[in-house]
Image (cartoon, rainbow, N blue to C red; front, top):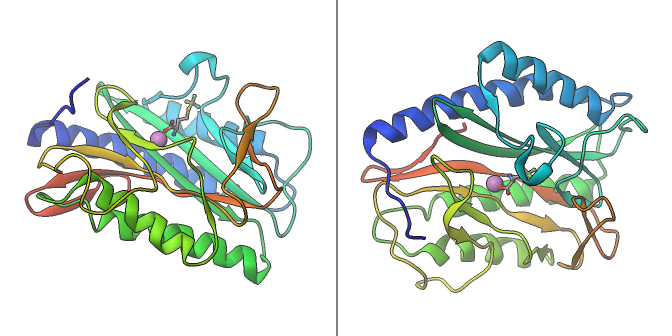
Length: 249
Ligand code: MF3
Ligand code: CO
């Protein structure tokens, strides 16, 4: 599949989708606390999506059972919300959500602290988020796709973190997953030339330890093989002649 370029009008629609998604994330964030379950977060998201008249992008996608992915501590991505045990002080929870508004997708993830974190875990969140913004800075006309990838890899590996290989970012538009794949590792100066109208979901998934992950028997939840904590930040970003535009801010 070729990389599909979006018109200015389409990017406007994706901005509307992204604004709705931001409201969903804000509603979830307000519920992140010790004692809450990830199902509490799911319920907050379901209610907000309905209030906004948006459509949840993840639910039913390849049979995925929820509107959120909620991945706690050593869970990397695709954790399924549940009521089996509450978040505790010092935990981290990665919340990933996508919505569809007027036919256009947006996709965004944030890793939240639950109360006060140990300094090492706080640093993992800070560096992973900073790597997302470093990557977004490379989403410019005339650059190359792997400039984005390399920005994440360079910043995170400098801290000794493991960059997950098995899961990558992606193009997004009328579909949640479009070409190109956007890895979080690669050689700067390589990959497809970046053009105005490309819209990318850029999403570093970074482990405090080894990059290796495995998927649990539920068929979804990816965890770190070494048990280290993992962080995930994602924005939907349009490449325009005026620079990168974060649609999920
Ligand atoms: N944000 C995820 C991605 O980019 C989507 C979650 S997969 C789903 O692939 F099945 F949960 F929807
Ligand atoms: Co995504």
